[in-house]
Length: 185
Ligand SMILES: Nc1ncnc2c1ncn2[C@@H]1O[C@H](COP(=O)(O)OP(=O)(O)OP(=O)(O)O)[C@@H](O)[C@H]1O
Ligand SMILES: O=C(O)C1=C[C@@H](O)[C@@H](O)[C@H](O)C1
Ligand SMILES: [Mg+2]
Image 1: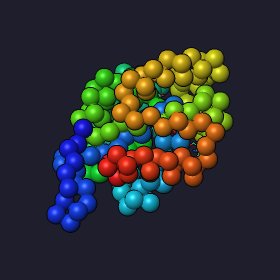
Image 2: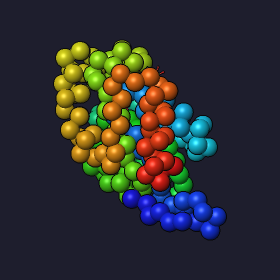
Image 3: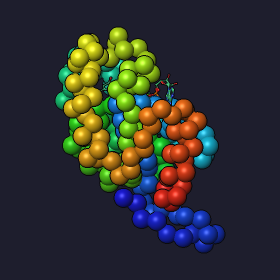
């Protein structure tokens, strides 16, 4: 994780890479939170799904369908490597990123991993375009994936934010406060 120190003008200066990575299940609100916090704290935000798409020249769904899950994991790691030279990014991650060992290693080397811990039912309600999601072909499959992934998110998380029964605004202000208190924003 990035080292922190007191700058000459009294504000926190992060040495090295100090990105914040938001992980969690589909539809948890990772992109919304990264975007909202970015606007509030004047930080750039990026989304790994969009980076993968730009680098691959096709949608993540097409990558998944044509190349398979291991290729998507490799493309996510390649996208993360591109962030190493940048500072203070808020990064919303693809829901499956914690299945990639290399991606997990890179996220920890480049900053702090924050898990948005929400319920399966909320994710299901909030997910956009479930019909084109590779893992949402059946409800049972999606539930199985949620159960499989939860321990992976927990294992990789430096910080956990319980987002159950919270509005956008609550999630944003609680995340902002937590990250501010930890000297990460
Ligand atoms: N706390 C919340 N309460 C209600 N709706 C929310 C909340 N957070 C996000 N949403 C809505 O849920 C949908 C999914 O949010 P978002 O795209 O940020 O999730 P995500 O975790 O990035 O999903 P994905 O895994 O698909 O990238 C959006 O329509 C967003 O407006
Ligand atoms: O859970 C997954 O493996 C995925 C999550 C999404 O963010 C996308 O990266 C894609 O739909 C695959
Ligand atoms: Mg997203």
